[in-house]
Image 1 (cartoon, rainbow, N blue to C red):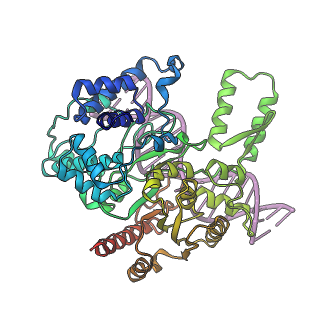
Image 2: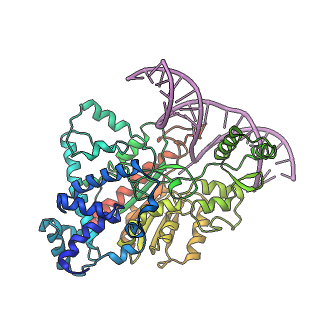
Image 3: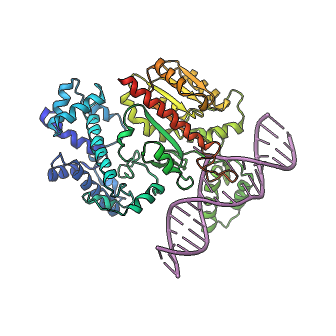
Length: 487
DNA sequence: AGCAGGATGAGTCCCGTT
DNA sequence: AACGGGACTCATCCTGCT
């Protein structure tokens, strides 16, 4: 903020501090490597962070308050953001930071006039990483840095050759990370794993899209999904890091299991608790059972299954979101069970906030009770257009009443019953009418993938789960049409 | 209809031991 | 490496009651 010369430097520092690294470490790393060697700095900082977390993770309070003002998503982000209103200003800043003029100006053009310098820098990084990713295809070496073995990635990126057979099997095997904390979680600055792999070139261009399904699917399913979605690697996250609901989803999210049928169990537990001898074993057993059946404490010695209201809250929906309009309790359980966890999705979608200040146009497939829409509203991203596809009537009613209640700016909510009814021609027509879509979002049916299914766990080709291919089809049409519209 | 209870089982991964 | 036990899972179907 003092002078322009120093502001470009502090920009780099700021960026790392915002990623959760201690300020002094950042400064030291930059002194050691020079601010242009971002990769080296990142590796060094990761090493520090790992050493820190293994040595002592208990004495966080010893730090004085000054050093931990890196509150991930807080509004201070916006205040620190230095906007260069004129293209020339931003270009100069980037060149000063050491980026080639040509690369910088392309990035500025692609990011639009409202983009801040930090965003443009992100874009350049992504482009650089994408190029490296391409090399991988030309000349095989280990593509994915295993998050659990950070040591392997903290070394300089030596390119180890691996046999071709390993390449083939890698396509089949997408390993679930443990723990599933995604690319980092609010209030846990130290935790960063499994950053989504840089986008392959084919995935570039609008619209953004967001796909979700159960993490623990039959073997090969996620590899197939990934290959159909431009080879982008899935991100696996457990919502327990965002709310009190612990479920593992691939993207990306998590919903609640069916846990309302356990009257017997609650009585058993009450009886046990009323006895005197509650030894350690019994206590452990009780906690175990509560977790298994998803019971909550509702009084002395009393546990109970979750009410729909409570599930609503856990999943991040507004109170009574699924209530009313003649909806039965069973239907509420069912609809909620199939939904997004709003906080988790909102965290992922938060990157869109500054990209669409004037509103976003969304194609929402398998909308359900509108988890994606609620997440966008939570982020205060105005929704100009929602085209929603949802087969269940009760769910469509819920989404419509949410829409009417919240009065989005465009007042446009178009509903379709069936993804298959949304044919290619219809999509193009809608895109012509509204000027394209900014985001395609949806989670396709998990029935035939979910472990709890005893009857028809038939995989991605199953009756319902095969609708995933409709997601791909629609996304592809939207992308190609968008490309044509840009010309 | 709506609701609650209960039976139904396998694929996958983790983690400890051999 | 290989093996085995344990834990886990956006489910489905049927029954019986109100």
